[in-house]
Each structure stands twice: as structure tokens, then as C-alpha cells.
Length: 161
Image: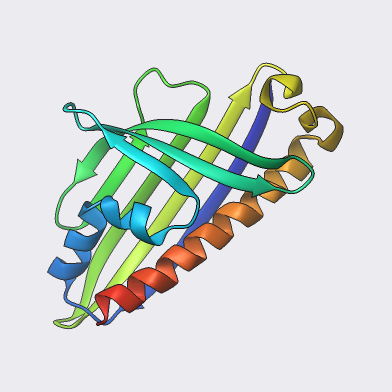
């Protein structure tokens, strides 16, 4: 099994009320608008979505992958999307937790995990075997971190207007 992984965790404060911040993260259109490399986000009636993300990975180059996810938790304190039941190849999980710091300040704990699984490296990309799991995962980690840092910066700007 050839597996590529990337994780991102960050906590940040937003100068906005918790209700506004929660509403922002509930509307996934904000991800398409503010996160680089999101090609599309399509919804079905059963609380599932298909995210298509393009990434530029060192050695490999540009690639596009789709992730089927389902809404696992959506309450006042937390929103979480997890891989759709039965998904085995492209796994995406993200969560955002909200904690009121004051009436006009909210702490957000944001986590995203990506895992791509293939039976063999060549099933992923013809250069993946030469690069190896560790090097491709490091490239994916850099790309995911960059995407999410940009998203968080843009999120803060939009919410603090």
C-alpha cells in the first residue's frame, strides 16, 4: 500500500462574535471562495459533499483528487466533516471548534487531515515510486499547510471587516 498523508492544526483568534464565526464555517462556499486550489465542491441531499482539490506536489507536479465527505457534527461548538462511509482511497477530515473568548472575540481550533491510499505507487502517479512515500507526503504537507494558512488569513480578514 502506497500512502500519502498531510495534517494541519492551528488555533487562531478572530475579532468577531462566535455566532458569526460559526456561521462562516458552516457555509462551505467560503472554503471555495477563500481557500486556494479548491476546484469544486458539490453537495448531495444526504449531507455529503465531494471536494475536488488540486495540489502542486514537488517531484510529482500538479494533481487533482476528489474527496467524498459527510457531515459528522454540526453544533454550536464544533463542525466536523469526515470521509464518507465506505471511502477507502481519498480520505479528508476537517473540523473547526469554536470557543468564545469575549463577546467580540472567538478562538477557532482548525484541523485538517488528508490521506491518499493506492495499492502501488504507480497507481497514484508514475513518478511516485521514484520519489517515495516520505518525500511525496512532505510535498503534500507543504501544499496543505500553504493552502490552509492562506485560508485562515483570508478568513480572519473577511470576518473582522
